[in-house]
Image (cartoon, helix red, strand yellow):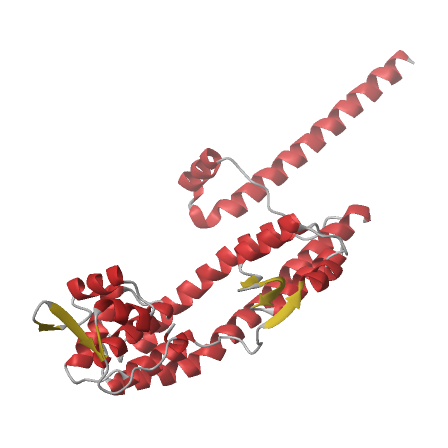
Length: 318
């Protein structure tokens, strides 16, 4: 916002309407900032309130911090630190470090015609609106035929999936699900680093310039670690689950292997408890194996006896 308004001349003075025009804020917003203590009171001259360049600079500071995601409450703390002489240089440096890019790629532009060509050559307004809602595309003011692409890699993945036969609604649904899971990972990593890395320089108060500079340096060191750790774990998990999935697919046409070694058989909890009370927990497996073997042998003997009896009766009849 501050880049779109002219700089104030030294000694410039404003009525509230002029200050609103110079800063880009509304008269109502300026009065609200005064009520919250974010903006110093103007000088009273007769019946008029007079603002100066310091008020304009303060409004631009507030607008910049709002653009970076700060709340009005946190902005007030920062500005109070500034007024107390502690400075905002280190804090703003930290804000810039956190707000900066967390990936190596740069945003690009793409025309509507190029989008249509990459996704099947058919105009799909619903898909464009979905991409805009997800932030995969962003509108460019004054242009309806060109879009900003914050992550060209993400758009390229979507194009490859669509070329492989995946429908656009399925791609959008997958991205929504994936985004929720990744945001959970990012939140957990932030909690972890805040507790173990940033606690010493970022407490529950506005940091000093030195503390903010230290935190900014730590952010620079931590930034690549997030991607490395996620990339490594994702590669491990993909190999594990892809291998299992392939084994299941191949097992459909593969005859079952002959049984060998040991197998696990689920038993009722009441049975396990009864055996434990009889022989002890550490001997349950041996007892069950012995009892099973004994039952098998008994049934085998019964079968042999029954067969022998039947043979004897046949011989007597013969």
